[in-house]
Image 1 (cartoon, one colour):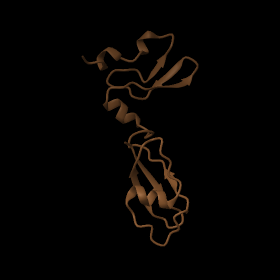
Image 2 (cartoon, rainbow, N blue to C red; image 1 turned 60 degrees about the vertical axis):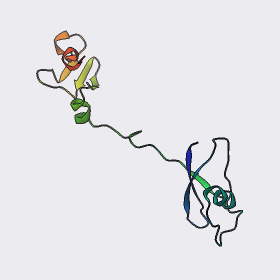
Image 3 (cartoon, helix red, strand yellow; image 1 turned 180 degrees about the vertical axis):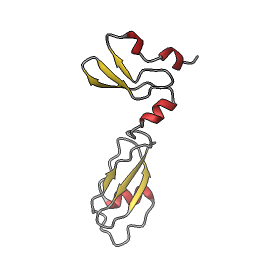
Image 4 (cartoon, rainbow, N blue to C red; image 1 turned 30 degrees about the vertical axis):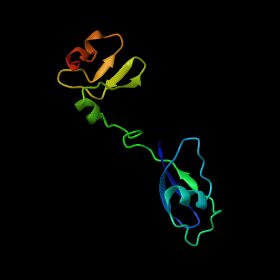
Length: 113
């Protein structure tokens, strides 16, 4: 079963609980029951909010140098038919022109079996 984080705005307490995806937790009382918490002075019918957690690395921008170190090629359009190879290595051309095959990135050198 998945883990969910909830927060109660009435008392500021955040709790992590495990429950089925079809289960909905709407009140502090329901959350306390699932998490095994003492409700304390907070009314059991106080609403709670589900927190959305994003896994690390998802939506984290990757810099050009990281892509270059991992062997990727990143082309950024600069003009019609002109692309900048921001991950150029060695003898690769910094700018690729659509009508000039000699400016193409050296993909065969980057692909390793």
